[in-house]
Image (tube, rainbow, N blue to C red; front, side, top):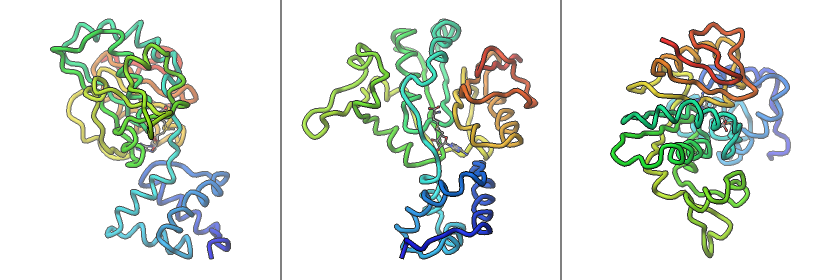
Length: 273
Ligand SMILES: C[S@@+](CC[C@H](N)C(=O)[O-])C[C@H]1O[C@@H](n2cnc3c(N)ncnc32)[C@H](O)[C@@H]1O
């Protein structure tokens, strides 16, 4: 039954618009096959015979759970520990020394995926400032995908995914799995205590109180078009402390966008006022 499933160009345009309007992700023509193969998994789970039937089903507000599942399958969640390491070098040399003197520290990973970026932030912060005892430290991880947020909250990673973590840090901040968990590592409570997770759609107004010392919003804007990026960057800038930094992915840039943020170095920007 599923072999015969095809998505017409008209149907693809309807999905394009639906996804763009809600999530901001711009599935261009050359991504049609990718979208088709990702959605197909959900059609199979729901036992549906056409993409049109599935689309009508997910847009029904009664089926909002399935909408969440659709987003889980269509989002690209690739991430790594210590990804784009020059950002962590910058934090060490330019940001953590002054954060270490503050009592209240607020950090946000705004498209945190399965948590590798968050835990890298927690590790590098602790390594730089030593103890956080007596300080009010919160690292917030948000993403639109509930699947990756669940993984992040669990904090269990394979041998392969922890490979970018230097051995002494791996020993210090992770527990090595035994028996059934052989080949896996569990994040220690010491890191987990600093972190909280919630689902947040970057396309909507941010339901966040307070400002952040710095924000990581890396490797997500690449899926958005220019007007969407411009609007998002303005919202992120408003969420920064004066002097706070925004980190974006190396393949991303704010050049050509209207923004109040000051360029510091590639993929790093600062709120001045
Ligand atoms: C490629 S991952 C990047 C993860 C991490 N920041 C990094 O650089 O390694 C992009 C993440 O953005 C999330 N995402 C996509 N659209 C989003 C939206 N509208 N709101 C919040 N998160 C979104 C995806 O679910 C995915 O986990």
